[in-house]
Structures are given as C-alpha cells and as structure tokens.
Length: 109
Image (cartoon, rainbow, N blue to C red; front, side):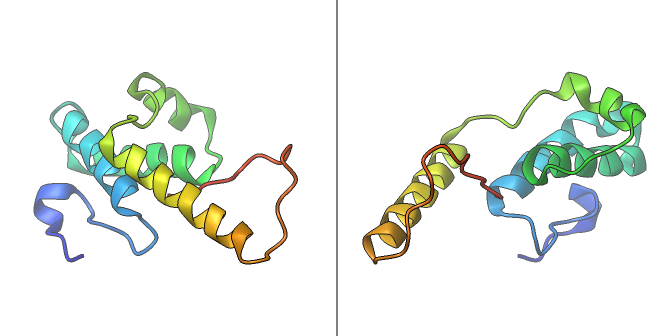
C-alpha cells in the first residue's frame, strides 16, 4: 500500500504485514510528540523489529522501548493468528510433513 510518509513516519515497508505496520504506526503516533518524528520513527522500527522479527539491538535502544509493551492482541491480531492456523492446517492436510509439536511455531507477521 502507498502511504504518505508525512503522517506515518517513514511509511510501510515491503516486509511489513498489515498488522505489523498498524502496530508500528500506532507506536509512532503515540510517541512522536514526546520524541520528535525522527526518533519516534527509529524507535517504532526498533520496537516492531524486536517484537515481530526477533531482531537484536543494543541495550540502550531496548531500554528506550521497554515501557511501550508488546503488540496488542486485538481483532487484527486474532484474524492474523486464525489465518496462520488455517494455513498450517491446510498444509498438514495436503500431505506435507507435520512439524514436531515441541517445536515453537515461529510467526513473522
């Protein structure tokens, strides 16, 4: 989707899911007045990459986003989880090997 960088920081990235982008935008909007646009964009990206992609960052960056909390478990989150469960069920039903149940399902939204 084409998004104006004026109102949302640096805009949606090709690797952002709709859910991930909406969460990142919400964090940017919540913190831009306090931090300024440039720092809010940077930290919103750190927050999203840390929570959704498992990226590692220096402790200073993690300390800056610690109070922001995890992504919300809202309607969009629940829809994404249902979609992923349905996709996994369809894949296992098509003769694809089932993953070890002890293995943690890794979800990149």
